[in-house]
Image (tube, rainbow, N blue to C red; front, side, top):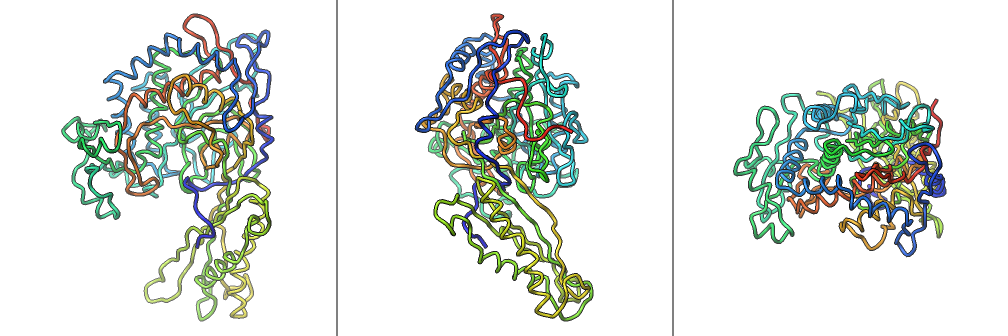
Length: 584
């Protein structure tokens, strides 16, 4: 049953006041030598959808465009060898099955490549195989480890006189994209850890069933070490096109594999950026972390970001234990508003004592009927912020052989809003219906709740995705991202999107850390996001290179940068990040 509609991204969770962002983006900044504090950019406003850019940010962008190391990186990214390397890396990583909350195999391979392929020392890899993240005060989310994969580019700030830190953590800028997928939902056995990458002419109809997908025989091939084999299928799939029409006319193919676009196309370019920073000796002022994050999709509950930002969902607060001062997500299109949601999975269980009486099926049905009668705040009164809710999934176990008793039924319900007050208002209406549905069914048979003859209820899972409404403030992350796009000449949007979505950015925004998001991949066509038939067709790699350049420049404007000529771009933010809870 759907009360209104689903959003286009994965489920969403909690919220806070837009006023927090004003605090998040404040501060006088800090020089990289710990001495006199120079002028630093300040948050400005968004006028008619366009952010006002601080002149200091515009000047820093010009210096980065002229920097020799940045130019050398761009020269390499635009070579045929680099274009091939990025494509191969994308295909080799995306085939590793990485369902949300079971990302350990993907993280393991990324960790291996950090050291063996991309030039990092073991101590520069900040995450661990067991899911522990030194320095965070949140290690377990929903009872499971968190398999992030992060590497650090060390800045100059920590070694300077008078450098400030939060409980020993020097300031950091984070750029990330997630490594998990919706499909498959469960981690496959070790001998089936790779997903096939099926190839289909783009002129053929898109598949609609798993059987149709399985029937496609043409696949990309890989050797025993997981490296792609450059055969005829490789040549067809790696060909890029400027438009979908050109792809149809020029023999383009769909590449079917879950996670192709959401989000390994972006994530692999975060890793490319890390590799370029390391290779060319890029020296920021503040430390820069580049991460593949866990738990963005489905019931992942934003686990990866909750670990990075010390976000306690029971409290709805983030301690920011690693002292991030700015955040950049690589899975979106510039959204600055983040929708929040509470999500419940409830299980209705048959009576412990068998016999004619209350039914788990009927108890669940009674609950759904009660939920369907509820009105949202925006339905009840004019001017209330739009709030939605859904009964997204209802399922029941099959009876045991020889029995007609359904053992249990599960109900997945979520409620969504951009603000806490309306979200809490909807939760206060929905949550009591779980028990009410159970009680109504037990009452039909004159059975007392809690008795062996009664239906019982259990909360299996609770999801929380924090939300944030930006208002009209151009935070520093937005400013540097916007300016970098103008300087590079890529993704120049006319206005900042006024809508809201749900991304990993929800966590830092709610915690108070300024954040902005973009896309790094280049596809000419694609579809099936979150479905078993997700696919894409390769777009212009030079556009991809420009998107990477934009991200590099924005990150370095935020973190500060030691330019090739010996001068320094001052960090755009104060060295002490914002938080809504202190580290214990």
